[in-house]
Length: 412
Length: 116
Image (tube, rainbow over all chains, first blue to last red; front, side, top):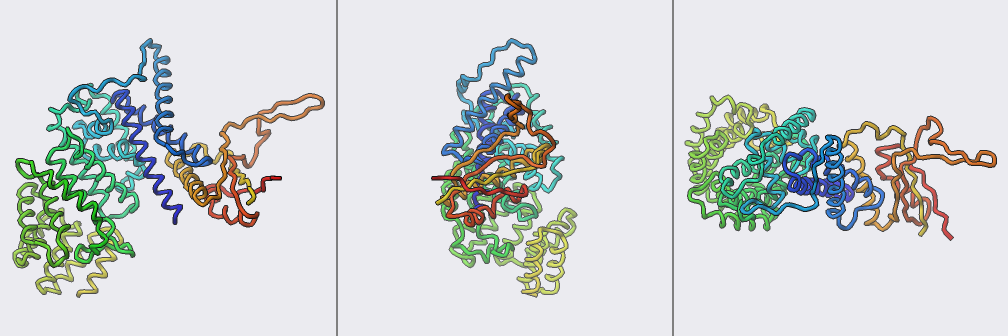
């Protein structure tokens, strides 16, 4: 098992280093060389691992990799220049001075580049996972449940699009442009977390890494002066709270554990404390964003000493505000569940029954679970059983289906 | 403690045309094994041989002949060697049992290093 751990660490190290190399190269060479940066970073990783497989990992892999990638990039650019018979002078040794009032951190620049408005949301996310976070096309395909070739094609198309962009639009946003571009970046990070957190099929270990990577990016954005707006703080708070339960929400048998049944000692205290700190810093907002409201809800779960002490009234009121802000059936379902626990189960059931005609919800497992649980709360066991069955048939990951079967037999 | 060389042969075309992801996955297994062996205090070093087939120098009467090697179709080539420390050959065999080379290729030759 220990070797498995090392292997997992190694996966994380190579993703992390790969992203760092690409960010450094794009920063030096400009976004029109994104492809070259990615190739060179990959070559450097391959060269490194081929050597390390016989000689062991060096004490400072980052320095080793930077040197190799840098040299290869120079070689490639000189070679290209010769082929084009251009006499252009390539000087990438001297990194340009960061322009004033522009984001200086190479990694943040790369995050903003991937979140460029020229790309669709899903491509922004896929490209961020690939070039910022270093996940392989195969891993990304596994997470999106899509064929690897399709993902690879989308990734190259995205890169071509970005490389064609004129400099001003693709360049790192100035502080004044931030207000315009930051929401897209936050959304990418938010989606990345949801993707990693969702208990669906696919490689669980990789999913967990995706979720933790989203937390890292959210914190980096929140901790940077220019990008650390109230909204960024709220997102970082939300993700810290959610991530604090990563260990507790899955039982030893791999089945999901309901919040109610989770061992609170298994929650990550440090993550909750960090979440509280970010939430505190997010209070400068003029009006609460969806991240503020969701972080507020998560903080109420995290700070209650036990299930019995959860302040359902406060949670319900935050869900109502969230519902008014985002108009999502998923939020409506959660609001109804909170309403049921807040002592208004009859009204909650009416809300859920009214959503029955939403075609999108037929395959949405949590909708059926919510109805079953609220019905059970009201003592309508027969009707609850029907909805548990709907939940099982709505097709979720194997662990969730097993869990539902167990739950249905336990209570009904 | 004695030293043992693990000779790691593979088919000549084993890594030809492999996707980068597949190749990375293979070498990561090796890195992980080497890291673990280093942590366990049994790893003493190693060298990967390049994929270039190299040359063979042979005696030809009084002179010396140089050939591209391998001479002819061979079923395997040496990919590299690792040195481990173990009490005896049996212990070296035990250490090699979970070697990723057996997952990604088929055999390891274990030879004791002659030390005085």
